[in-house]
Structures are given as C-alpha cells and as structure tokens.
Length: 309
Ligand code: G3H
Ligand code: 13P
Ligand code: ZN
Image (cartoon, rainbow, N blue to C red; front, side, top):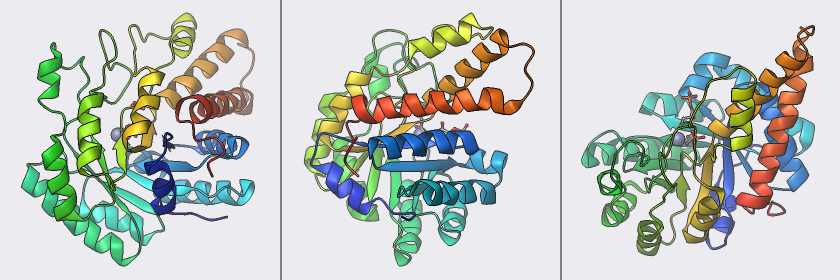
C-alpha cells in the first residue's frame, strides 16, 4: 500500500473502455468517503487537491489525511495537484510527496502554455512524477448560446499532437464541451465525441483527461432545494456520455461538484429533520456515507473501473 503515480493505472485504462475517477478532496470526511468507495469497489483512485483546497485545509493536513487513508484502508492512492497554476506550486507539491501534478497553462497562448508545461515536465520527471497539462478552454454550451461558439474554444486535434510532442507531457486535459461547476448546460448535455476520437487517433499513446465531469445528480439538487437550498436549474454531463468518452482515450475523469452536492444535500436534510442535534459527527457521518455511495456508483456504473485495481 502506497501513494502511487498514474503511469500504470493509465496504461491499463488507455486501451480499455473504463476510466479512473479523480475526486477533489477538502476535508477528512470527503477523503474517507472516496477511499472507502475505492476499497469497496476494488477500483483505482486519484485524490486531487486544488490550490483552493490547500488554502482552506492547509497543505500538511490534506497530505497527512491522504496518507492516513492509505494506511487505514490498504488502498493505493494517487495524490494529484489539480489545476496547478505556476511552476512554483507544482514544484512545492512534487517536493512534498505528491505523486502526480497538473500544470494548467490553458489560459496562456499556445507557445507560452508549451514553455510552462515543459518547465514543469523537466522538473517533475527528475523525480519520476507524471504531469498533466491542459489545452483548449473548458466552456460548457451554457457559456455560449450556440454550440458552434463553444466549439471555438475546444481543443484542436492537430495542436494537441504538437503540444504533446513539444512538451513531453504524460497526459492531456482536453476541452470537448464540459465545464466546471453545477451549471454546465442550458439545453441537452452535449460532448464533441467526434473531436475526442480525432484527438485520440492522433495521439493514441497519450492518456486524455476530462475535467468538469460531474453529472449533477438531480436527486441531490432536489434535496438541496427541498431542504432550504437554492440551486435552481443545476445541470451536469449525462452519465452515459462519460462512459462513452472513456472508450476513446479518456483515462481520467474529474469530479468535484457531485461530491459537494452529495455532502450538502445530506447535511441540509439532516438539519431540517433533526433541529435539536448539534454534534458535528451526527451530520458529517451521513454526509460521508452519501459521498461513499455516490463515488461507488460512479466507479461501478459510469467509469466502469470497479475491479480494475
Ligand atoms: O476545477 C476545480 C475544482 O472543482 C476545484 O475547485 O478551486 O474551488 O477547490 P476549487
Ligand atoms: P466538476 O465541477 O464537474 O466536478 O469538475 C471538477 C474538475 O474538473 C476538477 O478539476
Ligand atoms: Zn478541472
């Protein structure tokens, strides 16, 4: 049991129909819910930490929580930096034991994204740490009225091939219609699977990553709204689209919003039904259970990675 990189898990996922879930962690209950699900499902798992999570929980706490999860469950876990925005942040994570990092230079012009990614790759590879980069801009179809407008920011297949060749990056996050958060689509969820196929064909050996992959389960949205919340019209990527994408090179699927919704729905319901309770364990325990059940469902029914550890 150990903290592990992504090389082997992606090599297995690349030429198969399944993908590995990468779940964002911010506190103990979230870590436990995810790793308990991975143990139950015998699924590979990536726990990822954003800059915001590091700021909230403080870096040492999240690292130690993930180490504790490995010790407690015997499950191998990849500890990944999500959306690293500078060389310095990536370096700090590598120096303190992360087993995978993302450098997100997608907001920069192509050449600058290449320069920054290459700088991180050169440092990370000295320590055997794999690097994920991003090309294209995540914008759901909600951000642009027309699909054609959204497509203007999607990853260009030929650029993806050039980018991988010039940077030596280990995996690549691409934009094909997903976006972050709970409001991804106004109409029918849409992913540009044809574009994904083209990218995969041009760089068949590069594991691809899908950010913004929460499905925003309507049961959680309804519970939030029923028990005093206000998240009207929240909508995610339909789960069958994620399963489909896993067939064409998507090896890593990022999920954060669904964890937030599962946790918040559970806590809101508890507070309304048990106004007399004020012991945090009473509401954080069921929230952890809700996360475990949701993550197990993703692994089993959506990512199809149960039993693939
Ligand atoms: O991609 C973004 C993740 O959902 C992390 O969000 O920056 O609020 O921690 P955060
Ligand atoms: P969601 O907001 O769809 O959960 O995406 C999370 C993500 O991409 C983290 O990097
Ligand atoms: Zn993301």
